[in-house]
Image: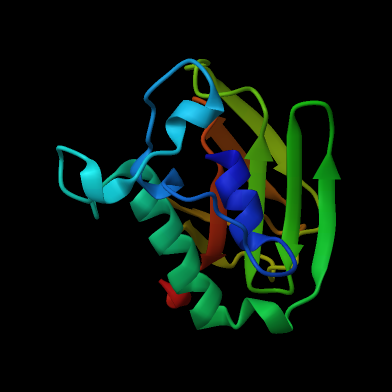
Length: 154
């Protein structure tokens, strides 16, 4: 999920491998995951986890005109990466994977949001306030990414 969030919020045109949004998994290697979607026994799902993730990010990309926004690195370490797209979006990613059910706390300093602004994660709907020093407390659970925008953008 973090890779998809990164690809769809990073500078440039997102790249998506055929079938990714359907979470195709048919074998032990990547080559077996690529399959004709029209031959699936199950119909094409518009409710799969990846389909809805991509849909939410793309809708917000359009709404904030992401291609016009600069990208600013905010935090980086061995397991966490955060960047902003202008003053419209904060993306928080991890590489711990979904196998980890733990919650990790990160403090993103110098966000591009105004102090005390109300921001919401477009992926799960949870909202929080930007701290008075413009930092944002980010909690990542189970390896899931977070993409925050101002509450009035939701």
